[in-house]
Length: 180
Picture 1 (tube, rainbow, N blue to C red):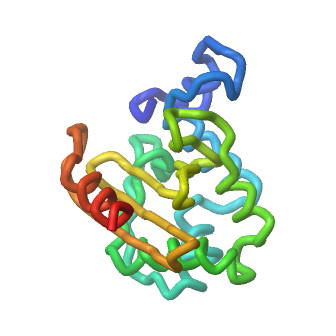
Picture 2 (picture 1 turned 45 degrees about the vertical axis):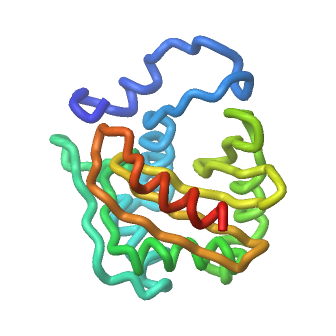
């Protein structure tokens, strides 16, 4: 996708194989499209908009955003944050948006939409734990994890570099926290 001359056209030309919401299958293309919609809707590059509308208000000053050959930020896998910055985003979710993100949207993103496994579902770009302990989690390639457990007032941020691997160490950290 990121190597295609037009990543958005590439994503939109993929065949639809099943009715939406019936079966979960992660698609970075959806994230790429969301990034493109945000950039087009705001009239600003994604990384610039994120810096002023999200990162700045959260006090996040250190971040990197990888770009494709076309010069556009890779929304599906390009942002790099320090653990403290990642945790600030988790705290924003825990706090219901703090006026930076509408509280109703925080509720919507954390509502289960598609079942992955027992007690493990997917919302809007977030994984959702629906068991006895409710949580939402951002899970990225390489072991990046952002766990928000509202019942415990808990945010856990894990950064790692186990790209295109099992990333078992990050999963073990989150499981240890959830199992405690």
